[in-house]
Length: 382
Ligand SMILES: Cc1cc2nc3c(=O)[nH]c(=O)nc-3n(C[C@H](O)[C@H](O)[C@H](O)COP(=O)(O)OP(=O)(O)OC[C@H]3O[C@@H](n4cnc5c(N)ncnc54)[C@H](O)[C@@H]3O)c2cc1C
Image 1 (tube, rainbow, N blue to C red):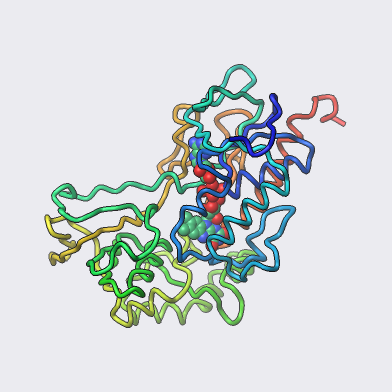
Image 2: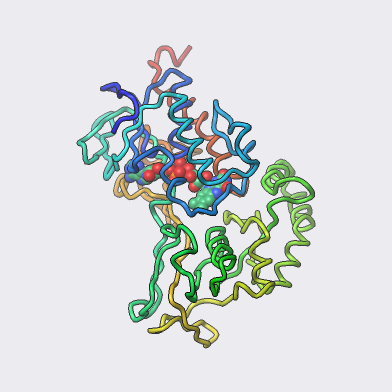
């Protein structure tokens, strides 16, 4: 289904109608460049329509809006999942973006000066290809020894909606990122016996610190020289680090903000652990028919194991087109691919400053570069 009539020939194909694809389409439009957005799901913002019910942004709306249309006043300070999904739909309508839904791109290739993409509806071609496929369609798969012997249920966090199906069960959540922590809190709040397996430690930071969102602090820190960051960051996070130690949640070797890993944002997880409603376990050694044996040798029984082991960029359709590194990412100069011409990536990296915020910076820049590249050479020289 096309959301608005699609011109037969457009210079840019964008793959993915999430925040990144929509923002790029809008920024191109603001520069007079038409694009078509090919979306695997049924509607723009499919990811936010599919995520778990309790989800709210942990970034504030003022720093999470997309270019040309900030998140409106009626939305909560920390908007809910459905508010974000509705905002993305409104955004697509506002800029009258050409979106073809139910249109998964399965492959892309170069043909002379053009990109050709393959969809169930046939091939489409354009001068420029923008990849805005996010991570949600590519959960990182982890297989543990003897997993097949387990008689309970193993599922990926990407399909978790709410605690209802797990009433009366013993649930182990594997992984200590924001998703794992939030699902564990959701389960614990609904009285479900919940454990979390943490292999290598994690960092937990408050959502708000001294009246400012932690996201705002991340922006402030970023503006300081590196040496000052190294002094200010630990001082800022000393209290939450102590709380984490008191709760018995192992800490990561790199402090929050010092690695690419986004820390757990919000202290609800620590509170539930301290109350004894979430049990912390170590690394998994192997599955047993009734549960899990941990690296320290003890065993525990579970009915359901939820794998919240992270995501990788959803770039399957570019297999063989550009090489990907161990984290599933291509080589880029900013957002431009280094290993193929006229190929851009928006939102390849997550950040504590907020991926939506990053998108609001990357999309206008990608649009600027594309618009410049589409100008005839003679005009460009002027
Ligand atoms: C649980 C969770 C909470 C988050 N919370 C925050 C937050 O509080 N603040 C923040 O700033 N960021 C947050 N993020 C990070 C980020 O903002 C979101 O992941 C955001 O959705 C990224 O937008 P995107 O457009 O890159 O990806 P997505 O929103 O996932 O959009 C990608 C789109 O591409 C489509 N697609 C994928 N592959 C194909 C294909 N081959 N062909 C066609 N279409 C395809 C998908 O269906 C999807 O619609 C969160 C992420 C998650 C998972």
